[in-house]
Length: 454
Image 1: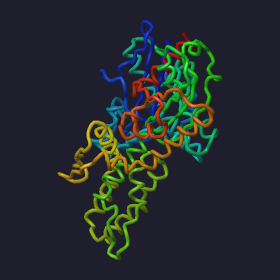
Image 2 (image 1 turned 90 degrees about the vertical axis):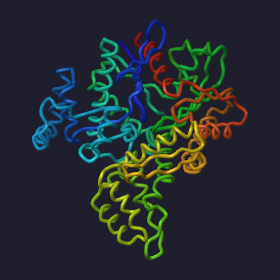
Image 3 (image 1 turned 135 degrees about the horizontal axis):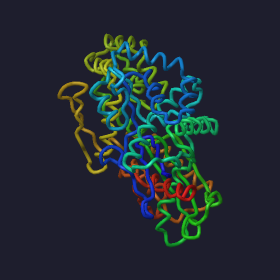
Image 4 (image 1 turned 45 degrees about the vertical axis):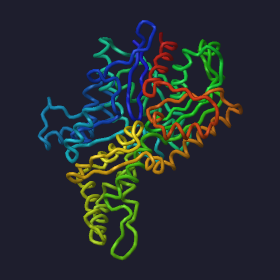
């Protein structure tokens, strides 16, 4: 059985063909989109979960040999934490978020691991750790999809961005693809192919096109933005190879997560002392605040959780004109609730698609604490990443050396009126079409899987 697998930065989804149409499979209850999150009782237990859930005897044996020392440490961690053999140690999707919110200090939580896969300079042990995180997630999602389908899935097409990382070039892309391939194989996929995500979104759109046109596909996902100029239409969709139709493309690691981070910094960090003054009259340093919200940056998170940062924040509390504000940042670090703060930024972004102003409760920081957030503030906060997205659209069109007939916009972030206005300003009078903001990539991957494996 084949399937399209959107292993996204924000959400994951699996699609299959059902009587000639794409069907997105329920993964948890009736939920077809699973947040790209993982929570483990301890990060050292992730490899044990991976080993336990590898179906192939040969693959499991090879994995256990490679991770022998880590698996042995996992057994010791179980004993130290008094975790029984039958106890759940790992959760994915909404279950991961629920466990993180309930037990932020007791486990290991990661959101959008796909954002880290192309990071330059990763050591081999770091690559192995990301392989384990992605494998554990893929195993869980595949298991849920097969339960819904009541069939095994052995072949898949997985979406990939044009570029996984803003820097690092093809070396970063290769590193990320190798991690994803290894994880997919350990999850039980016997055949794995990849397709550019904007092209996948375009394939879904192309199904209903009545005439050939040049389309600019703008896919603003959680971790990356990809723009592709593609020839599409009835005479193109029958082709098995679409390389000649791919006229220009650009992509960078800038997406919905970056908007959440910038909004969280602008809207919420003043409540934690950002912009306040020290007793000396100097302004509070901004770096600890940026490190707190940059949840998609490995180095920033290591710095924020470091002992040196704890000492810095304690000193800033002593030096601050208003120490109670900075104490909130220290508490955020101590209780590991910075992911929850950025989640509030994400929720605010979504709510501001339908409202000009919302009020966000921040009771996990301090009981009764709330903060108003306006669409105007959101637009101001995200100007930096928005300029980068606009530059990517311009770059793709420049590469194509022709003007598109229409623009097809997809990706959950693209629902925001602020984003839509920026796209319209960049492209002038070119018509803009909306796709299924969440399901179009999965649908395109599934249709391509049918072409390859059907």
